[in-house]
Image 1 (cartoon, helix red, strand yellow):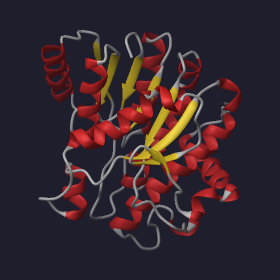
Image 2 (image 1 turned 120 degrees about the vertical axis):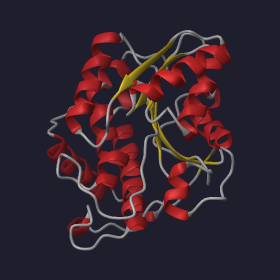
Image 3 (image 1 turned 30 degrees about the vertical axis):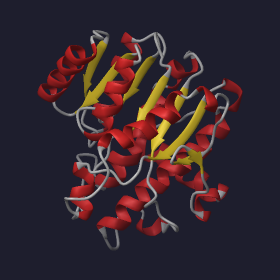
Image 4 (image 1 turned 60 degrees about the vertical axis):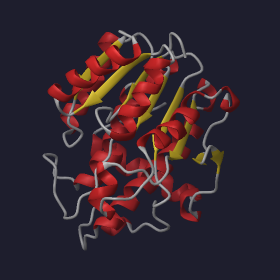
Length: 272
């Protein structure tokens, strides 16, 4: 990975932070993202000290604000000449329905829509990447059905359903973006990192469970850089193997409908 430029969202904690360490040790230029400047500064210095890699850069953005995401994308476009790997990892689990500053349900926006907006806003950088890859972190807990009339818990909110819908949307996005970028040589895949003992897992399912974050990072790192996956796109990985996601995730009409809704809500018109 020496010389590759890698952006990892949500990289000040958990799987994202551990993945950043993996890439830093491999010699990559690592672009960190987080909500807190203090945490970003601390993690950046920690990675430099532990790995000896000083090519670590940090960008602050709150994914509960689409304007923050737009500013992040603008900064990346100004500072980077290409992006070889984009890992969309940041996520939350909300026990109650909370609206963002944009008036959207928090889980839907942070876990999915902000990544949709960021990815399409920096896609030109990815197109310039070397054997470029986009990895969306999903979950085996992704939904097996979708109700477009209750997409953001407008009628009834259940925290587990909100989370599972956001992770299904990550898969819809993966499959549709893979189809739209076939001619650009970009690999777009999604991954279930495992049941990992993160703060998100504790928020949703309680503490004292889950595998170490390093295991989740290993699974994400594999999909993001393994030479065995050169040219592989539009797949869902579990334990480093392409696996069938839920039946609904292969519904082309539904995934295109999600894309259209996402474009409208995020204020985008895209032709990737």
